[in-house]
Length: 348
Image (cartoon, rainbow, N blue to C red):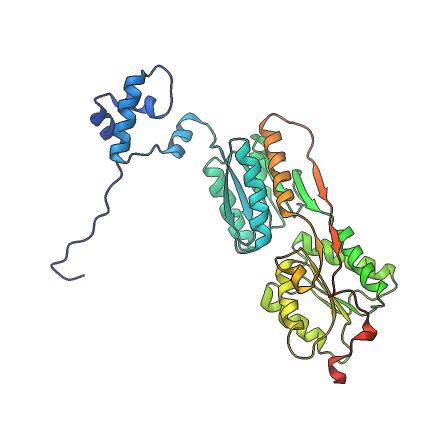
């Protein structure tokens, strides 16, 4: 800034006192009119509303709720990654259901960080969200206990907690993974690998354990080709490449979520890497790519979680419920081929 330059001062927002002065009423009357309180004449309401519009005044809903002790009509949704289409569809299902009940959805991403999750939970509760839906990244949730005692509905989505008694909407992870393994075994695959997040995430842990169990039932080793250190698409690509370039590679791979599926497909699309493949979670263009998936509907999951919230807000005091949504194996070209029709990249 040059010596002669003047600092830019942002215009200040109009105050309630200025609205009252413009309308020719007291501050108390202006407040009652703008907050929809009774005993305000139609003429006075029109005058105050016109003054507020002229001045660009907005009611501070958060401050109003704090004064009255009320909660906002907003429901918080904490998810792992705003860029993930799975979470976008989940939020859409929840939002549509909540909107029909006169509620608003406020979403935030934890970036799969337990620390960030705690900070966002505290912030949402400080803003008096009427309920919270959460795809948790944390193992421990002591900060929900006091809110539950106060009657704040808490619904866990996709990932059920182990330390909190609360409503939860989850997938049939075991059934989906068992169907995938059974399908690959039916085509003659014995060396089957898995790409997963760290086991601290409950969905990853459940899917890996279900994979190992299904492999054991088939008399196969479920740990030989397991990579449970895939945090994102890039690491999934690296892990799949490492597995498929071994001297004795797996003949089939399973990825435990849509982001890892994309990473695995990138590896399979490079060079001379071959394997039958199934991904957990459907994704856009999977049908055109011929990719087999363990499918489910994230919008149904979001709507079900929202329904739990609405039930609790309407006075439902029944014990915590856990809804397990079904999954469906959609078999396409990527998995409908046996190991004898593929060759090891080392043999070419």
